[in-house]
Image 1: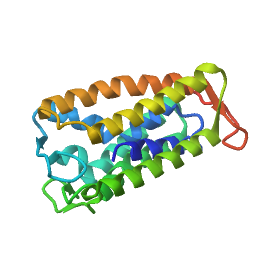
Image 2: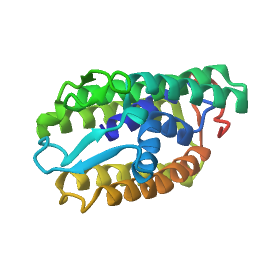
Image 3: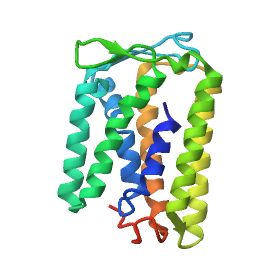
Image 4: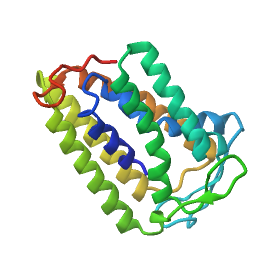
Length: 227
């Protein structure tokens, strides 16, 4: 999934109003933040194989350290612990850990059976990517619901809080639909580099937009702390 992961991060703002949207995004997408680094380091591999699934030309041939269930649980614990040590926010730490773990579960729904339970172990995947219409319907519905929950939990303090969010949502949707309709990437290295560049844009943008928003009454009752 792509925007499906952002959807759960947006929805999580209601449960963790003090936590920056950028942190929630990073938690929900942590496995995909680690993955391109490991690909560039030669520790994990991906192959460009148009037709591998209907939705994506990427064949994830080996990614046990970023995308196995066991390691996802480990990454979740590390991220949650690091957030707790930095902020002292137990609720936010629990939400962040849950978001990291949610990535593997959502990927299981999307991928063909290529997600290992542990390095070298059996692989899982329900294969939603076998259908483009169903993938779009599921992800965009999740994204709409997540955005609705985020908007219900926060309100703009000023024009930046309103329009920076609009721009961010538009950017995510354009990037998502562009990946669906665009040509296959030229190489695994290009995939990894573009992915990292994308995070370098999305995470600061999310932090900026979220700093200009505050929690609504009934969604924690306190403004976001930007952690």
